[in-house]
Image 1 (cartoon, one colour):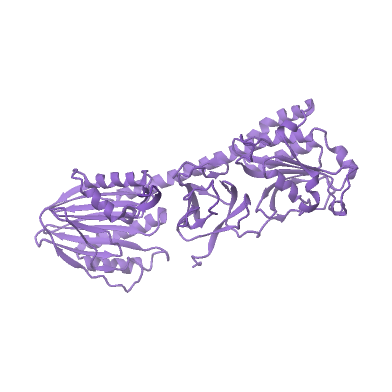
Image 2 (image 1 turned 120 degrees about the vertical axis):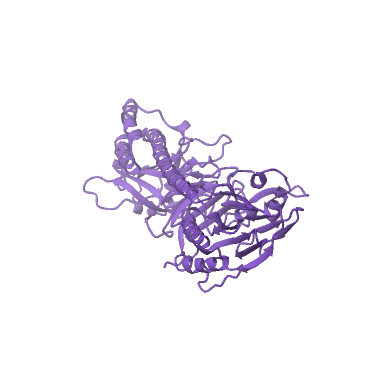
Length: 567
């Protein structure tokens, strides 16, 4: 079995302030990204456009998802702003914009792939200029005709590889430069990946790429490098054979190439790729090949290509989202089949139960099993983790336990057998906390086991509360040899047992302190007790209403379940 601590994904910074690549462990669970000290992925505290709790990453069976946590400045995936608290699958090479950084999502460690661009920062920076929209020369009729002729093909491209090949053909025709490549940045240290390229027939030497050009273009502007005959250049440039080159950024999002933000500062952009053209080693002959208004042509071509690429990415993400929704909704519907009805009565007992998954399918369950002689068995369980893997283990756990309790109604016997069943079958990082009890109307007793759960209450007819957390033991599945022993308490007429999952107790909300500061605060078992003081006919609804008010949303961070049994 692979080491669960082995990092399985990386956020590699491409642009923004200098920070190291971020490792994310592949064990199933959630990782919160932000500036707050409680975040598992901490960004610098002085990053003012990063919220304290900005985004959440989830690893589920080796697959990753990201959700924005209602951040002020937003989380952008491939140029699209994510809706708050909505999961979106993340794939290899996706671009995540969390201002001021653009990260590449990778499942391979940094610097394990790609080519290194030419480090010419010290020798060519004075030769590189940005081409702005207001500085570009007007296009001639021939280049305008080429753009119009190419527009339909660019916007009809079905994938990025096809778009890359088409752009290379158009760019070489429009600029006169002979070498062209469609490249992507792999990190902030200048490593790149070539998606498509073209060189003249007979040229065997590989293309090289100027890092200074890439850095200039990474700010969202076409970058041009040229050496004139009159330039007093160093021998280093001669050795690099740099004559003429243009780098065109392909930007995802609404901003056009070469346009600054309204306040004159660098706009918030996501550069997805670069169209890189040059004519290396040709001297003056190479410069004569370059059309006078090639830069203006590249500005227009980059704008069209960026819109086409953004559309390709948007359609791909919509397809991902639709497939995820279909799978999760199907799983949630199947999961509802195994739950009992929300309310019911058996003998002298009645119950109310409700489970709300944090994200479509959940790892919580509750069950109610009528037994002979005015007895009723109930259970509430919570599988560690979330999503589909947790729901599968939950289904197996609930089915085994239901059959055992229906057969003999012995709490200890049922849980000891369940533990022996679950332990060899569970994933290494999964277990089940559980509260299981048998209510006996004739004996006026409750016999129960709290297996690492801890969230059971008994409410007396007078409204007093006491904990039902004795008879404790380890969560189910942790140790195969674990022994569970039940404890018994007396029942009073009119009492009710209230069992909740940790998704209720541990739900965070923002609370104003006496000093006027907002702090994160959990709902806690005290929140459950406060909710039950309401004498409404539906105490479960009262609990969820209070929980949503505390969380300031109905999109809960974890599965939330409540079970109430009355005698």
